[in-house]
Image 1: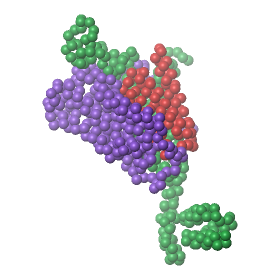
Image 2: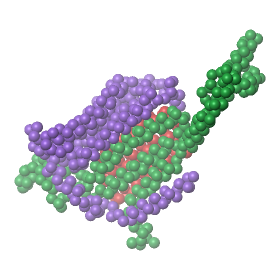
Image 3: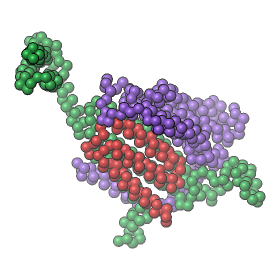
Image 4: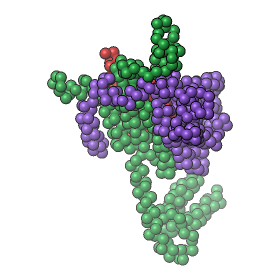
Length: 249
Length: 240
Length: 82
């Protein structure tokens, strides 16, 4: 059976190598992808249009904001689907696991984590807010925040983490992130522009058109961060306890 | 064989990176198709996804270029560049300006980075959903190996089909025996008797076990089994 | 030239990690080797100049994705037949 599957795989490999023969040299600045007018426009005009030094964040949140909004919606749907699949599933009595871990929270681990968690959360806020000038942005900050809650769930147990961040709040916060993102878009539509045209916000706030795009990008990244935080934590909580939210790892 | 222009030279030496990307893609694809464990299939899928992202990101590389964040001398805010000498022209202090075209090629291409950021996050969402499905399959069937899974699905299908065929026959049996219809098909009483006899085997001896199993098999009646085994146990209790 | 050598070395390590993640019979080991694979990818992208992508892969791939996979394997059987 394994030899039988090797033949189509090698066939696909041969096709890919036949196509790879035509690629430009690796790293050459004159290839069609590096020389395209779209990329050159992005590199040249990001500073003038938005005053944001990080080109990747500017393209992600402003020039291609529509993609990012639907990507957030996809993450939200994945989280909801996991809850829907695993809710009220499983056996009535707890599962007989192979390795029963009924240990109490360890002293060294809990005290170290107690010192680390505020630092991690401040770092997550920093990454989110500083995404305009350094590598970072909404996703990375959101995942870091979610990871801090997962760390609480791993060092103590799942009930402690759920006492801090209950499951109902998870869905509400996730939805709030998308509402914030689409809300900024619709708000700028009310002011006379197109959907997600941030420059129109200069009519309401006392900033120039470029700085309006700067600040709206921050708002949009906050929305993305909220959704990603909530969904990462809810994904872990549902998967480690089979939807019953009682005993975690 | 290793001259210029030969196909092997082109593939393996000049474009070695693309060759290894293709090898990674093939490893991922093989893992998805040939492995039987569902979690291994998911690992193969994830290897495939990250290999594709690697390929796209490497298309954006320019030799000798820097990361796609404006350097301080091209900073759009204009006021971080004034640490230098006083012979800076007024254009820098006047605020953001369009970057000149010969400076454009000093920066990496930011467009594939943006697309791949989306791809990574969507990939982790897909992985979470697939793991939830694996968990549900394990709860329903008790296994996550593909061949055992297919065998169990087929046997359940056959049992449900045979049940739908057997219903008129069971109704005629009811009038003869005056017992409630059993929910599952024929295999039910033997397994029940086996479990009952297993529980009692701690206290009963081996011969009694065999007699109880034989009597249950001959009558195929749940209540008769319980009566027989219960009477045997009460007899033994009376004796000791 | 040094950079090309570094690239090739990390790519060969990647191939080894990918093959290993699919060959081991213990699912927990496979999840950990998969985390190593994600981290090597992050290193490669940081060297290529894609810092945002490397940051995201470091948090998402070597962080949340591995933890979620281990949480699931904890509820399943740890040994796979192939």
